[in-house]
Length: 314
Image 1 (cartoon, rainbow, N blue to C red):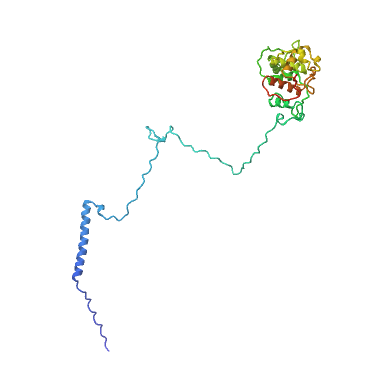
Image 2 (spheres, rainbow, N blue to C red):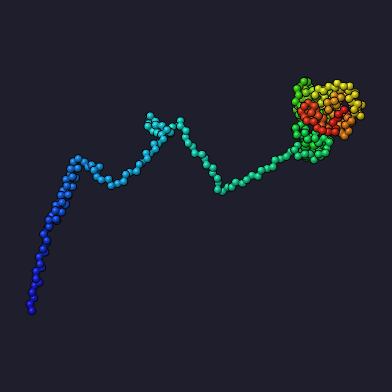
C-alpha cells in the first residue's frame, strides 16, 4: 500500500463584474468626490449653515431679565465705589416677637372695681331715713362724704369750720367781702382756706374780738343766717308774721329774725320731726346740714326739688 498526496484544491474563481455593478461603483465614487469638492470650496468661502436643512425645533421665546433697581445706589465720583443712597428710603424688617420656650403667659385676673362709700350706701342711713334723699344727692355731688367704716354719722353735730367747708364745696359765688385774719386760725390750719372763702363769699362772719371759733358747733339759727346772707335773700313780708308759723318762734335770736324769715319764704328751712318746730338754738346735725345746704342749692337753681314732708312751706 502506498501513500499518495491529496489532490490540489481547486482555484477560487470570482465572477466577473456586471454592468450594473460597475455603474453603482461609479456613482458612489462620483458622490464622494462631489462631497469632497464641495467641502474644500466651503473652506475658502466659509460654511453657510443656512444651506443645511433645519433639523431642530424652533427655539422658544425668552423673557428679557428685569434690570436691577439701582435707585438705591450711589457711585462715588472719587472712588467709584457703589454705596447705598441714604436719601432713598430703606426697608427695615420689623422685629419679630420672640417667646421664651421656658416661660408661659399667665392671664392676670381682672380685679373688680372698688366701690366707695358714696355709691354703696351707708350702714347707718336706711332708705326710709328722713334725710336719706338729701344725703344721697350731697354725697353724689361730692359735697359730703362718709367715713371709712361705711357710716355717715347723720346725727353727729357739725362745727363751724365743717359748715364753712360745705359752703365752699357747694357754691362758687363771687367774693364780695374782705378776708379776715382770725386770731384762732393760723395760715397752716387745715380749716383756714375754707373759712376764708366762706367769709369772702359773704356766707359767714366771725365774732367780736376777731375770732371765728372753728371747732364750736353751729346752731340752726346760725346756719340759716349764713345761707340767707350768702344767697342775699330778702323778706318782703313782716318777719313776725312769717315766723309765727313756728311754735317756738320766741326762741329765735333777735339778730337772726330777718334772715330766718327770708330763708323760710325761700324754702330753705327743713324741720324734723315736726315742721313747725324750728329749734333755732340747737346745734344742727350732719343730716340737717345736708338738707339745709341742698335746699339752698335748689333756691339758687343748682338742684332739683326733693319731695319731703319736712320742708317748711308756710
